[in-house]
Amino acid sequence: MLTQVKFVLLVALIVGCSSERAANPHPVTDDEEVVPEKPPPTEAEQRRVAKARAEELTRALVAGDYHVAAGLTYSKIIRLGGGTKAAMQKLRDTLGELKATGATFRFEVSDPTDFARSGRDHYLIVPTKMITERDNMKRVDDGYLLAISHDRSETWHFAADAGLRNQEQRAKILPDLPKDLPLPILK
Image (cartoon, rainbow, N blue to C red; front, side):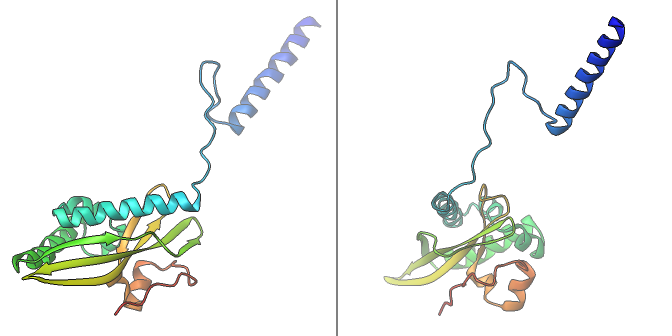
């Protein structure tokens, strides 16, 4: 009788532990610290991080760090453009032509404005200004970067306004772009 009780207790213990393991495949052991799951970032935090990443992208463009610039570009744009090497070469050629004219350029990045979600994806509009100077002349072009995050705003990648002006091209790049996100109309 005592052996049967021990057997039932042993089976109960095994079943209990295995069902706990199934519910939590990574149980905490006595020597591990319990780390609570990080809450999702607030909208203000998302805006701050997106702006910082946009500033990183524009600094990379000015410095000619095309590897960093390509790494911050929305991956579907890179794929459609022939891959990372092709994107870096296009940046090098385009900005090289501008620099060859003797022009200098810099960017100003403003606080992100419109925010939208589509499923897990988050989108922000990050207004920019490109200031180009040459021969005592200064030109300021308004623009924007569309910030896109697929991981609850942990990381942000960008699509420049020029690549989003054509509706057909925009639909290929961003088929899930929320309809209620107003993309700026630039002159």
